[in-house]
Structures are given as C-alpha cells and as structure tokens.
Length: 241
Image (cartoon, rainbow, N blue to C red):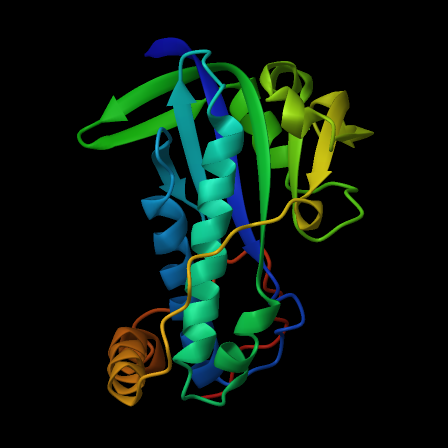
C-alpha cells in the first residue's frame, strides 16, 4: 500500500435538499440530471483523477505538491457545471420537480492536502488515511454561503495570491479530527465566464427528452432506487409508484 502526498478535492452538487416526498418519476429525473452534471464536472477535472463517485458528489485527487493550477482548475470545473446546468434548462421539456428544480442546483468544493494511502485493486484505486477522512468531514461545515470552496491551511498556503485575497477564515470542530483552521471563498464573488449557450432547438430538446427517459427507465421500473445515496437529498418517505 503506497503512501503519497496528494491534493484532495470533493465537488458536491446541492440544491435538492427540499426534495423529500416526491414521485419516483421526479426522483429518477433528479438522479439523471445530477449524473449529467457530474459528467461535466469530471470532464473538466484536468489534473485531477477521479477516486470515486459518491452519490451527488465526485471525489478527486492529484498526487504531488504542485497546486499552482488549482484555482484555474476549480474555475474550469465550475464553468463546466454552470454551462451544463444552463443547457439542461434550455433543453428542458419535462415539468416534473426533478427537472424544474435544475436552476436551483449548486456546486461547492472542499479541498485538503496531505498524505494518503493508495490501495489498487484491479482498475480501482482506493484512498485511505486521516486526510481522506478530514476532507469528507469538511462537507459538513458552517460556511454561511451556498456555493464556495472550503480549504485547509496546506491548500491556502499554495493558493494563487490573486485568489487568496477572497478567502475568509473559519475554524471548525470536525468529528474525529478536532479543531481545524479552514478558509472559504464565496464563489459568487468570483465571476465565471461562460461559453455562449446553444440556441433553443426542438430536435435537440426531443433528443434530450428521449435520452432522459431511457436512462431513467431502470429507476422507474424499480431495478434501482433513485437518489438513494445522495447526501444532499433527504427523502423521508419511500417515493410513490
């Protein structure tokens, strides 16, 4: 089991937190909507390698200690997320809650640097260690804004000075870790330049609708439970059929 220095990053999609007692149809569409947004996040992840998909979040890592491109990478990921979200809105034909709430979906990041143990099993790489635990604990925090980057001291020290001036300090008590100095950036204070959205197109809308229904079929037929492992969706009742 190899131990290396690594930069850890979790990109977490939220916004469905009030999505509780809903029909399976809406939950299935919510599942597939988040899947499409996560695909955009992964495609834009650059130097980061995907360690694991965790429901409505993606856990990434990058080995080494060169964090100079971190700010640009986060900007690229956020830009890809916002562009895909806008396209989903433009192409939307369905009026269910899972589709109508797309505009409320947000993206936040937590990032930490430290030593991790890598265990490779066939084509999968599992990460372990206290630093992996810490970055996951950071998802439950007291940051007072919805869209942010939350980081620890080791990341702040390597951050681009231009971006560092936007940070605010916030100490946390993380379960199993203790008092930890953290710093956050409100992403709404940083402009995100988006590519021009595609113009509305009926054929593209129909194609998107067909793809959404086909990919949702396994949830609608009950082969899989939609949103079952989403950390940002609280479902208190089993969705009705």
